[in-house]
Image (cartoon, rainbow, N blue to C red; front, top):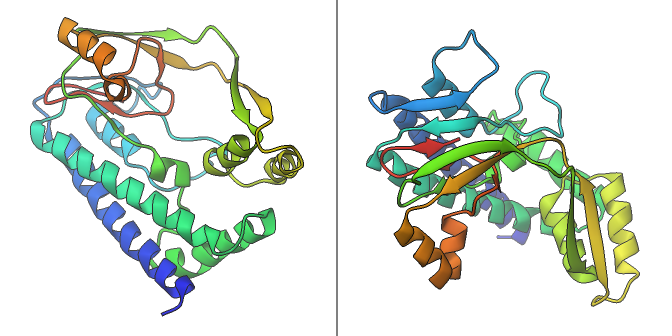
Length: 259
């Protein structure tokens, strides 16, 4: 079996697993009707907030008229059961597996913009078309649910004060950053070409304009605050106040989920 064939099979298998886990989690969120929910929705006609939250969190494809550079987002708090928590963890694993197999698949085609477009076309017209999911939104497929082992004491929301973000990286790290975090485009490819001409350890600053977005101001119980100070991994699991929420679907354990 060739590497290309093996990569195609891996994409197919992990995508099938992702679609199935996605369905199970969506149905579980909808089934937790007895638990509380609050979302910030601009669609007053849709009064089924739990359905809207479940659909937004599990949307893998583009919807009609969706801008190709936009990601489905929803802000709020959604109550979920312990079973739904477990299904969310399995969904996170399925998303990570699919992301890894997609990275392996595209690597076979090379890193230049033409090669990436060829890989995407091969997927759309071949494998994904056969699975009837031709218009996958890969950012929505890859993003992880934030699972909280304990609910916060309080969650408030505020608008981000800054409208630009910066990150300092070496040239080699910046190349990896662009390839992993951004959709392929001529502009991104041009930036990568410039970075490849620099010494690998030269430090560069990446600055990008940020659209206005909400941030969650989370207050954790005392034991979680102590845990965050002692364990660096806990800081990933329990985000600090001011965490961005414009793209994420955060879940709190058995009682709450923040979308």
